Length: 126
Image (cartoon, rainbow, N blue to C red):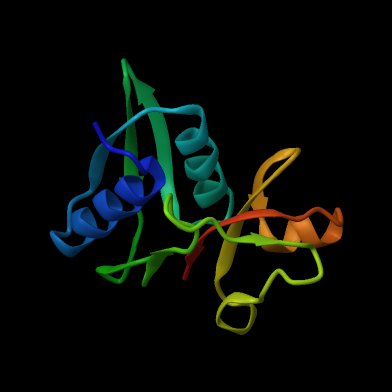
């Protein structure tokens, strides 16, 4: 069993893109469904669907290059990182996104700033 499901999720996407796969399967949790929904809304993946106990992630490519250039986990199980809404950074000068776990669920850093919510700084994606 994996301790950090988000890090495993990001690694599976990264590995699938390096192999130019069209889709990948990841174990399904509510948190990972929220992350996948954010990635779909922000146009980093084509789509996702729940298949039994897994999520099938359909990866997006633009001119045979992955839509996601880099994925990095910020808050780790051994060292949680929390930010107030004033401290949420702009990722790649606004071209990327960060995912924050707030009291109202997972959301992008931009949306968390607008709603004036802080929380655990999960990951950066660009």
